[in-house]
Length: 225
Ligand code: SAM
Image (cartoon, rainbow, N blue to C red; front, side, top):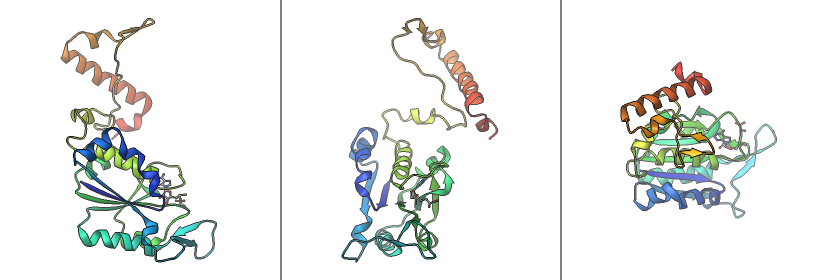
């Protein structure tokens, strides 16, 4: 898989790809990440990529041309399955969306900033708008990283035990059960006996039950799905 991320502040995107599972996935060539600085696509001497909003209003708006130039260049080299704009106005990100995106080959992710981007970019190029939640951040870089992280950990080979991803919260509309490691007794707080029993059937039943109890308590809405 290849992901191209377009941003006005590309340095914000670098660190998470240089460590842990994401870095290993890049090293193993499971994923290619290409980060593009929108300022490299402006013809303005001052590297301007934003301008005032027509009709007035407080914030600046990312201009069409630099974004269009960058997307056109990428699309002239290969087909993209998704051209995603990260926006609080988008569809809320879910595990299901991540599962679907993890099946795709080439993805473009556009990060907004300031008041957002010129609507015509959305009309012409964007085929998915994704929000990471009902709150507003200063820019789309953190949301883009959230999206990339969720997708990359699902790619076969990126995690040493890929079955882990299947037992994560949300994969079956249930939250994950409690987990424990050594010591088995911490100042009287003991690991449940069943997990030490070696009886896989009972362990699995206990985990299913705990998942259900936790979901009912914390996220009853998931059980309605
Ligand atoms: N004026 C916009 C609005 O009210 O919807 C918010 C603009 S926000 C300050 C700047 C950029 O941050 C957005 O264009 C978007 O790319 C990104 N952003 C902020 N919150 C986000 C969220 N919850 N999910 C995804 N992207 C977000």
